[in-house]
Length: 313
Image: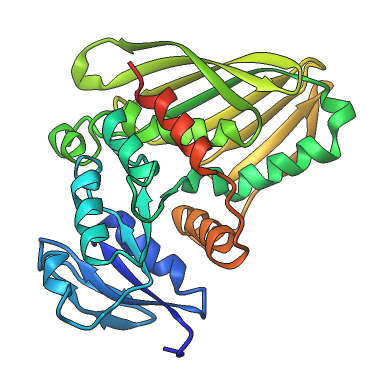
């Protein structure tokens, strides 16, 4: 580890935490120095070397670690409590928390709005997908072909029905877990200004929700609809933008692919070779923007607004 490397501690060594560590391997000026997880059977590695994993944040405080960055990748319900522990023991560290910041609006506001302590950065990783960047390029390069957007639709499903109890413990509901992903992607294309409805569809155990929104793009207002569910055979994450010209811009977030339909044919397509796993590609792009380029695409005010639209009553 170089003397100038940013020292990173990851709290929560599950699926999300290990992806953070893997993504950070691509940044020479970052080094994961420790993990925290109550499950001491979990292993964290960084650049092929095992990293010590402690049972609690408190257990790291007398180890001389002094992290520059602390990543919170625990269950959504625990984010607020873990964030309090981190800011108490490491008041100088930058704090990164998995999306959403919390499962209720009061806690989300306290975390994002600082509460008098250091800022909390939310990882809206889906908004940094390669296919999202490709689609934004299409919007810029083919503005005349597309004309104005008239509607946005987003579907996010996960096959969590068989392990419903575990999913509820980790994520709460499909709306809390996936709704924020959909909103963050939409926000890259049009400003979300209002939620007009939110309803649960069918049996509670299916965790199926439909949210309707209004977006603003320059002088135009357009509707957006988001559907989330845990009642599916396979995961699906798709965002579709329809334009007044009849063109459609589609992003398949699971496949890391996209296509543009115009004048009855495919006007352009995007895909990837799959060498870099989907989520790792998202986090690499997010860290490139936040850690290297120092470019905060989602400001504190934007982050607050997205959580209000997601969690507001």
